[in-house]
Length: 116
Length: 130
Length: 84
Image (tube, rainbow over all chains, first blue to last red; front, side, top):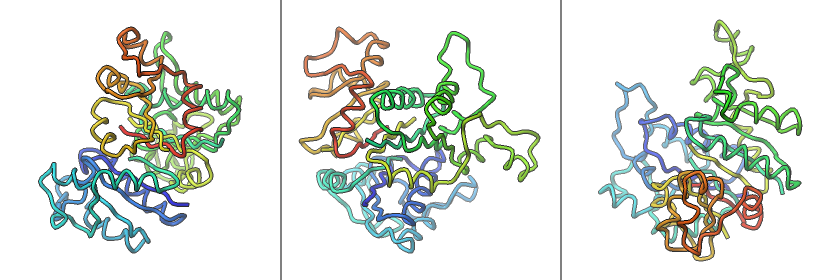
C-alpha cells in the first residue's frame, strides 16, 4: 500500500501545514508513504525559518525527522519552486524536484492520495 | 466500494463539510460502505454540540448525527485538532480541567491513527477541503 | 485513472499541471465557476451549479452530475485527488 501525501499550503499562516505534517508522520508508522510539495506547499521547506516569535512549529526541524520515520521519497514540484524563485539549495531538506508531468505520474503510481 | 471520508472544513465557514455530508449520504444510498468519517483541521467543529444554526438553514451537525444513529456511520474527530479548537469530551475536559465538554452525540474523539487506518482499509479516500 | 476534485477557482492552478491525459475532473462548490472557462470536459455538481445561477451558461463539455453520479465517478476511478 503506497500512500502519497500532497502538501499545498504555506506554513504558519494557518495550522493546516503543521497538521498535514503530523498526518504524514503518523502514516509512516503504518504504510509506505511519499510526500509531494506543490503550489504554496513548497514554501514549507524554505530553510532558516524562525517562528519563535509566532510560537508556531519550526518546520525545518520537523522535516528533518521525516527520513528517520522512513519517509524517503520526498518530492517537490519544480515549477512551484521556480514560481517563488527558489531552488533546491534553498530548502531545509534534500528533496527530488519533479517536472509537473513527473509529479502527475507520481500521483498515478500511488494507491491512494491524501491532500493537505 | 468502501469509502473513507475526510472533512477539513468547519460547517458553514466553507461548503466542504456539507459536500462531504451529501457525498456520504449518496454513497450509503448507493449501497457502499463508509469505513469512517474523519474530521480534521477545522472539520472538528462539526462535532460541536453547542452549534445552533438558524431554523431555515440545513443543520449540518444533525445531518452527521443522523448518519451515525440511523446507519452506524463512525464519526471521528481528531484529538489534536479538537484540543486546539476547544472541542472536547468528558475525558479531555477532566484531563485539562475545563468547565464543560461540548462533543456532539455520535462523535468520538480519537487520534490520527484512525485517519491512516481508514485510508489503508478503504477503497477510496474522499477529502473535502475547506 | 485519477479523479481530481476542485472546490475553488484558485485550486485549478494546483491541479492542472498534475493531470494525466486520462484523468477526470469534478468541479464542486465554488469550483463550478471554473466550468465557464475551463476549456476541457469536466463534471460539475448540479446543486452547486444551480445555486450559483450557472445552469444555462455552461459549455457543452461540462456534464452536470448529482452526488449519486459523483459516487459512481469515484468508484470508476483508481483513486481520488482533491485540490482546495
